[in-house]
Length: 303
Image 1 (cartoon, helix red, strand yellow):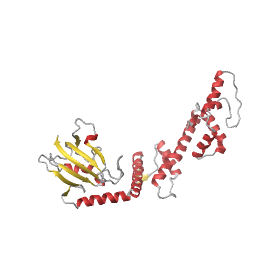
Image 2: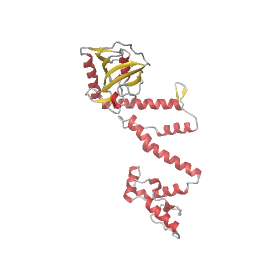
Image 3: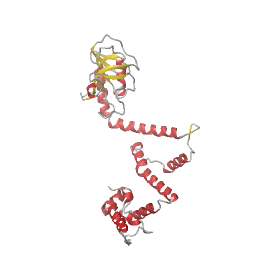
Image 4: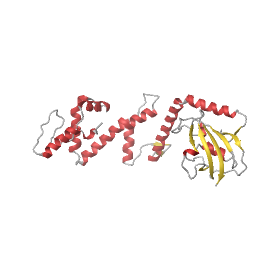
């Protein structure tokens, strides 16, 4: 859709009222002609404008009010006071149609009777603009940083509830899978629920947390789908990957670190990582939340 902010613009410039259905043009030269044709080109089709108004909480009965708004937006561009008001009007409209609507969908998805209190929203908004917070929790004035944390915590709690509901069966299946692996012969337990099976027992040194190692690995989910492997990355050598053994290693399940610190160099293991020590409640681009991960990993060296 065309940018509606500029639709029907040029035809309004020379007139004090653009809300009328018919405006008499004053064509005296080529610039006048260009101005008129530009307005024609930028104008929406009637059906297009009707749809736009309907989609944005208005109605096709108020086309003239829309045209008046276009006129005021163009003629007041040099009036700083009126421009500030129009900018605020635009921000307020965006808050109601986008930001607050999205927050309510996320936070109150299970209770349609709950809504953001607009008066308190505006009080908080105005307070921050003037650097004056009226909110206190446990006797302490809530500043912007605290407000961000409170809001983010609410988002995370709501997201967690949604994911738990949406992926309840998936979570149950992945937890059952790890439980079944733990009962198999030859499977040992590392820390935090991580399981492993030794394919080849190495004789070298065992790495420690925060050390850098060279490994070769293949990662998959319980149905056998491979989502990552050494061979998928362009590195200095296609035969190994270099990583630091840390719980926040990028792209690697934290639970893999729990196994690596128990592996002597030269070992090859299958490591079964429960979802809590894999990619948790967020999942990844390759699979949903609550997914257990299986690594076949070979520890080549400690650097």
